[in-house]
Image (cartoon, rainbow, N blue to C red; front, side):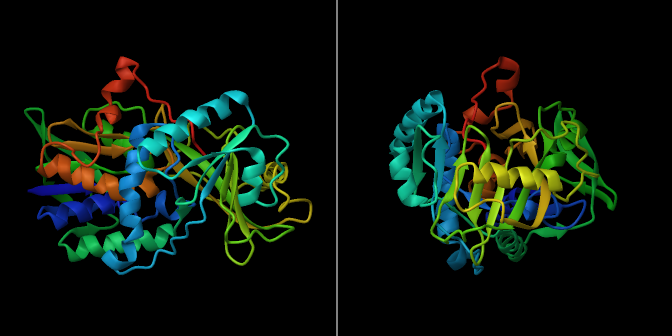
Length: 382
């Protein structure tokens, strides 16, 4: 079985590893360098607290891998489990939190519905006054995306996959409606299957296969700051969901601040976007964090920042399916691709080698949902 994986980010390499580990002949084609797209610019969050069952299941299956990553892959990914704290200002958001926690607990997740006072017990500098409720899961956390990527890359290579950098796919060849190969700027490759794991470029790759899929690149920014009061390591990644602001501890009392409160250019070019964070945005990010957490204030010092790209769908869920014979999409993760990569890699291998997915029911992730108007909106987006 010859498989070409398009994209050398963490979803592509996790897929390449799972495929090669099961005996497929795999070539990864990455137009730039490994991880140079979204993975290396990720904030590294890993959480169970999503608002839809399929996302919770993807998290649950991925966390099983993250927990044992150092033993299985021989790489310490600096996995820290200080939890996620989600905050609700609006009554409607608080009511959704209750339903979400009930669903998450049904899926075996140790998430909890908290009062604002209880939330302050896990985030001591939290200003409770603006909030109606919160949710918390102590098993959530974050890891180093670069180290995780290196682990999957090394494992894929050791399993027999060939990883080609600076190799762009320029055409996808089909015969009688099925994929039979790809053209690259370094020659042609036969393929029984092609996996589209191209992140922000996924829509363009889908077009090469004659598909029009609603996946668009969106620019997102983060900043590393020295707060007025150091953020202890045990403080959870905290999200003010109704404003879109978040922060988490970094190293030695510093913090990462971010969010989606500022509009971004909807027509961003993934080949030419600005990878530097905007100073005005970083100042605004600190101001948002200072509005609800006493760690931040006028003396907070901005150290550095960067921008990356989300590959966003209209309902903030990915497309994971064999869309046409021999063409598998694993795209549109809307900022959650890093954390869900272990499960998605296994699902891609199942689609290619077994003809169907079994790890998780991915019926809700079919691209047919967009035309049918059957969207499954993910509410817990940061």
